[in-house]
Image 1 (tube, rainbow, N blue to C red):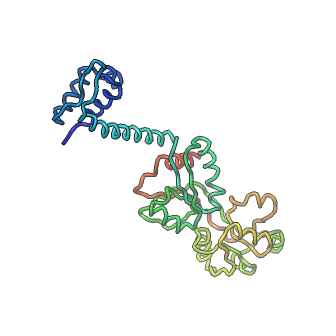
Image 2: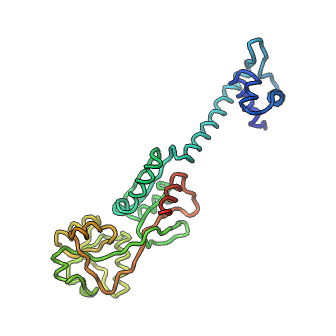
Image 3: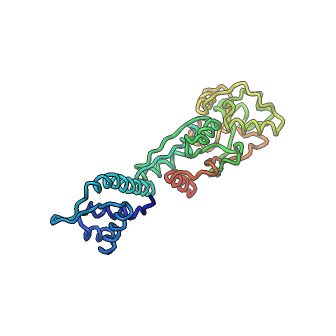
Length: 295
């Protein structure tokens, strides 16, 4: 049975308001239009829905049965509209972000603080993992966006937006800084113990590419899972480490770490946002991305 939803809505308003005149006012249509809509609905259904009494308009017995379903339907539509508007106004919603611990702390958190001040009711969840695992979670629909070190392997299903330029450097404690006099040739770097993250972190893959381009072995014996642990070992004097300058500015300023310049220079790289190419992020995620890109 093909019946216009608006006819059911008119019946709902008449019953809820208790009269045709009040329904007319709430819907901003004329009383004859309301009466005609009820008549049309009754004709299409083949039965009487309303009875006029001295106390006003009441539902027939069969009308009561139908109205129970109409009431649920109309109110579900209204609840859906309200939920939609809440999302648009960011009075609710959620964002699921994938990033490394280092990226979360140094890149993502300042933006999340601004976003949370503006939209405190949006639920934010962070997953920290290797980029390869985060990409899998994004593709499986378990994350809305990633913030990761670039470059990364490009794919047609991924949209990659660079947001920050960063600079990788070699660092040591004061002892190694004095030993190298603050600079070293790349081919001499392996005369000192070198400490890096394990593969397949994007940072390590970028280092490997740099070493290979200069005909240097990528076989590094001192590999550690956590970037923060790499820095702890370097501070303790276990060797020279590989780090991102922008993420250790306090350590460099406070002389807990020292930059050891290397020749040839390490190329610059970027941090970027990754989303699925053919999927539109939810409204909350979209607004966060807009905030980040606004800088």
